[in-house]
Length: 482
Image (cartoon, rainbow, N blue to C red; front, side, top):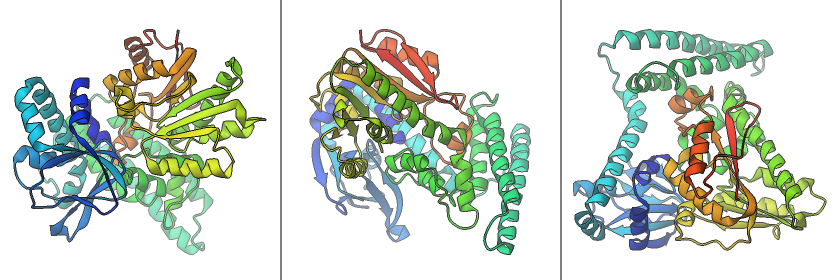
């Protein structure tokens, strides 16, 4: 999903409308082949819901990548005029938008502005995909060229920390063999401290405030990933974030795993490294935001003049905060919650929990595409809402889309109703770990950024309030509909 935004963020609203109006929606079942390697294809596909997978015959059909909601498929062969270089099939039941290449050709010829924006989007999308594969290529072909002194000095500093930490992990392995596969507590404590120090060091070296250019950051980050990623893949949470089985890192099960806060890695040191990541500021912030949203929802319910408060969660994921609120209420009828998510598995997960807690009447589940909703292609009939919020969505989206989304939310709210949007702040001290090792790349925003977004939207005013969870790196920007 993150890669697809490189394309969608370059397009105007009219361009997106053209795609949605020209394309044909198709429901495809798991296993259906959409594009066959070496055979001409007459369509470019946009994934709306579900998951596709790409395979190569030269690798005996081995999967080379997943394609999730928002991703485009078939654009390379469209641009080059060559036959597809990979086979793409539905990994699960999915909804796709098929755009005929002939229609796209005509549009490009007739509308030069559309063509310029689309080609730029294609270029940025290709660049992001290439960068995401660089570490794999680097494992195969080591760059032996002379490095600039600055790179060498920086790498020597990082490498020293990395080697110290790897020595700790090796010691933990040795001692656990002598101790019935248990890591002695003193070594476990050293590893937890060492992980935090290592994360802080790479953030100081490669973070937003580091006084080096992006090319050097990328080069050092790639070398760091080669050294450290194998250890992170021993953790269950790190492996899921990196592999992105639902098409992006922060899917509903990733967030649920962080909420559950359990050590579930593999081998002797995997569980301990799982704990190290779960104790990192970004993971703690995710856990903290659950309680903060409970407070906000209960506050809105207290202020509501109606017998039943109406709230909507966008990109709701596991919706743990909703179930927390219902567990506190003397009567579930005090709250009506609408949960919107593009991921059918997320909605199924929430549906099971709602059924177990006998909350089916109070929770409305909507399989909704927020791009469609924000552009008017999909309609959702709701009573005026007291609160509309999202806590893990706009970190993936450009300002342009966030403003469109705010315009849509403004129309959902009753006068005096609130919107709350969560976003990671640039002072996130785990950002380099997320960016360079796990490839969980988010858009970080400041308080001033959030004020600017609200001013530019239908709300027309800066935030009425900005809160931070206890780590101080996840902000929650509120605005009230006048």
